[in-house]
Length: 141
Image (cartoon, rainbow, N blue to C red; front, side, top):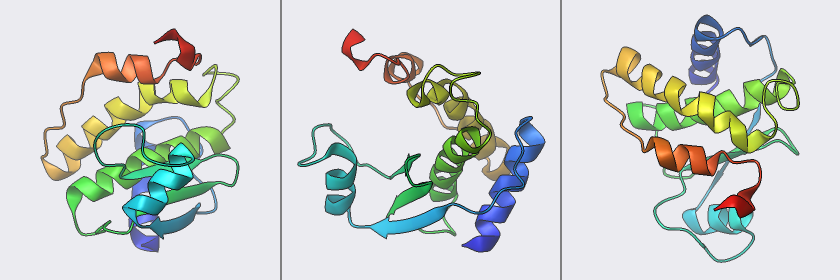
């Protein structure tokens, strides 16, 4: 896992202006049920599968226990969360971004670029969903 994280941090460093000379974040693997409880605070409220999330309160990335470091899609998921970590560690929230949620506007396009350029996977995401998800005031929608 350390090698995968190191590679992903190097990729982030070449594609952004963020400092990636950082200690690796904590990584905790959890079951789907545990992830839902940790993220949503109880029973799952959304739809779909929660793959991972970054918690800036403790610099920890929580990954689904089904994560496979040899699977390109899973590496893209880890890259996504590492980007949140790097953005947080670089102090961009409060400067470049109004809130952590707003970082999704940068993270999704970089995840798309990584999956295409490194693994040849076309990642199509709903840009409207990302804009709604990145609103700093979640009461807007």
